[in-house]
Image (cartoon, one colour):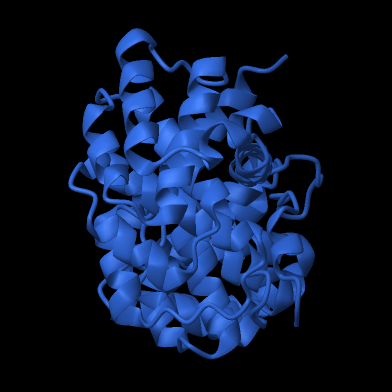
Length: 359
């Protein structure tokens, strides 16, 4: 089953024998954020300042030392603000030194003041430099300034990706090194996904790079994996000591529930307890909306335990939300955990109190 990512952007309707008119705000925010990230990445990769041919030609006939002197003087009299004539000339000259593999390249980096402007210049130089992988790694290794090294690394990797380098061979040891050197989440995700598609990385390798700090890899891999593979990937992440961010966990739960509620619950029960309970609640909320009879039948057959009680509590909340008071009361009697049952009864009592005040 391909193109699972399309499902991720479906708004989830939460109901229990009632109206289906409330969309999950978490998923809408997730979809909007993914769209913003995609647009931002596209804009960033296509934001090269237009260079006058004279800027390039200016340095062609200069020696390395002449270019270096020119750039040093330029840096001393200009802030090198983005898209200014001075920064455009500086980029052209620094790129010339980079392509010549001149030692002067590293000397010029030393005259750049620390800060965002300098990082932008270096990133743009490497974005336009079109270095091959080994050349990029060798060059970045010799840059001593951490901020500029990261800028160079991400500019170079972005160049490889933008130019459609499909045969990148970066083994996991090198990828791990790149990550430690400051490879961005976006570029890491792209390289991991490309490596999996080429056969360079296994699903377990991919799982090692999943983080609860960002959802780039999950989003990227969901576009190419089947449901079974995606479930396996998320479980491997936890087995490797990593975990999904809260939003991705909830989104995956909804997506899996839409495909097969029973399989989705089997997946949730293999997660660590806290994540499993969160996923189960999301799964039953979604499943009851799509097929309440099947969901109810499955719940009644589940073994007693926290997952079953958490799932039942989710149904109680769902029923109350859709004014199904009697259904909520009935489900509450099936909860064994005292704490969870107390929550369910409290929700029901507050709802009854609210409706008693209505005219």
